[in-house]
Image 1 (cartoon, rainbow, N blue to C red):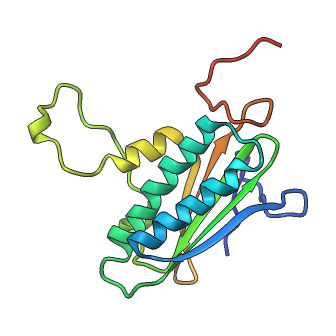
Image 2 (image 1 turned 180 degrees about the horizontal axis):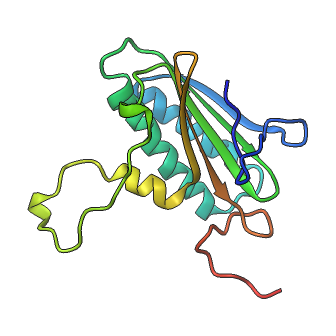
Length: 172
């Protein structure tokens, strides 16, 4: 199984980075909701800032819904595995599933709609990847062993609480 990667492309699955969580669930809407609640409960324990928990919730909800709606659409119900780790600088997550591969073997671009477009002309969906890309760093996809693997990183602030890349800097 592919390892989660840090910003330098290094592996984060080692003794120095103990697992924060691992949640398994069927690729069904209600099961995914319960799994997401488990992840959020786990994040409340290690003093992770609310802003980071909300970012994790948004990114994971979008990714998990994509699995249920698209990857599983033409396949039997399978399993989703969510793994999370933390080091002093970031949270790392990986979602794997045995659904259909990503079209073209790559993550969607997730470009935002053009400015000035008439809202009546905008598609119903397709904004999730824009949201995911705006919140997550080091977003990666691979297909290995008949499973999709999507990983991402969310930085923590200098106190380990999760200020994010656009958070105001506090004076030293």
